[in-house]
Length: 297
Image 1: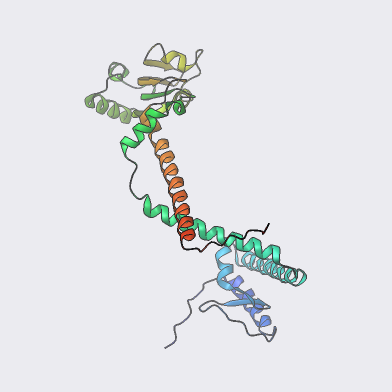
Image 2: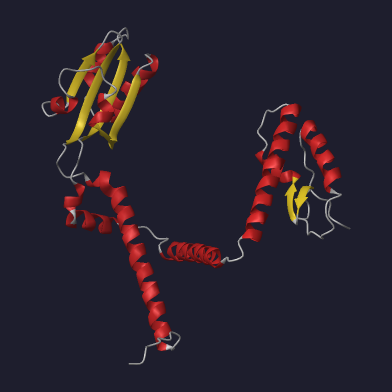
């Protein structure tokens, strides 16, 4: 029993237009063309075939039947023009040495890239260790000078009319589970914004854009105190900073960790590929698979 080709559902307008095209295309040429099994041919030019499924893939959603038919008509015309121009270019460029060379170089590049990806995937499936990361950080601190200040802490944005604001003012600088839970409940009740980032670094710039405009830069204020309250007509802003890493200092290791890991992985990959290529070269020399031609003096 023969397998039935997959059914292709197209808008009525497109289907009608394609049927009319197919009736005409059946009269074209007598050359034998190998068609893709399970696909519905629509137009053929000298052995190149456009299928209904190809048009369906690029057909925008939501078009009316009339617009779908118009889109299909334009798509088929553009496809035909491209095919004819390409075939005409082939006929008019008899010397294809340069093109063949470029194609072969690109093909080689694709093979090499894919082979390298597979080798690296097999070799470096394991994680970089914390010891390796810390060693690199300690040996290369000149690479980790901060160009902007970082902070950890808590940021609250509370409507001015919120009830019992004094409770939050008394506890927002504390760093214990009981206080955190109380703050979260308060924020939910009062539609307030609550950002805990005691475990994650934020730039001072990121925080500054959340606050009302101040006469002094936030970075300067944080050098004098770790907690601040700001206010405008609608909100109270509470900020508590647990750790401050100033611009020009050494970047904290936990902030640099991901970047260090990437550097180490990349360095290992480069060294590994260099060794693979060197081993292949030495093995080929040993087996006399490389022939050097020298000009006679």
